[in-house]
Image (cartoon, rainbow, N blue to C red; front, side, top):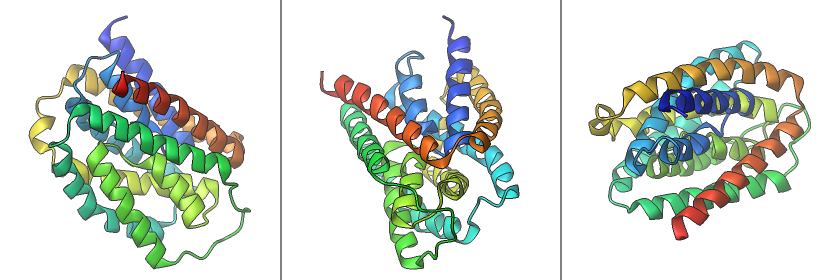
Length: 248
């Protein structure tokens, strides 16, 4: 299968995840770029940030129109994570690829298990404490910078489990957080962006953007708890694969 077809297929799947689940895009983008498309770990993490940043930014307006974005909480989350994301991006360049892969798998597995064990709160408005939002956002930003991910696969569990948001609101708000965190992390990787294979990354981004629109429609038809379980199971499968690859 050609690199172009692989890029289009992977991009569509990742866009679907971002549009429907508000996350999971980068956790799928990184292995897709490394294994079938042959990117190095550094190039894959940089390219994934580009892909997820653009896709999240284009998917955000539709969720906002439906009232599923908590702007104040999302911006506080993102602001708290910007500094740690930039610092983490600098640290990531000093770590071996196998260490990054294993860490990526471990964090994804923890997030998945948390989501499987946690039941989303009822469909009611929840009061969010600024201190908790800032602390969670800072931790998320650090992970984003180190692992080269948008952070949606951690933002959704944090917004649901730590801050008590409804699943659909967490999905929409996480897109705001992902966009800001990805751009901040990319600021420390500017030197590696020009060297990316844009013949692959460009179609990947385009397919992801289109897939996100379909994901938004899917989210309107499927219940929040079902989305959460699907999200968690996908994370567990990807985490297991990457952990095996890192240690074997």
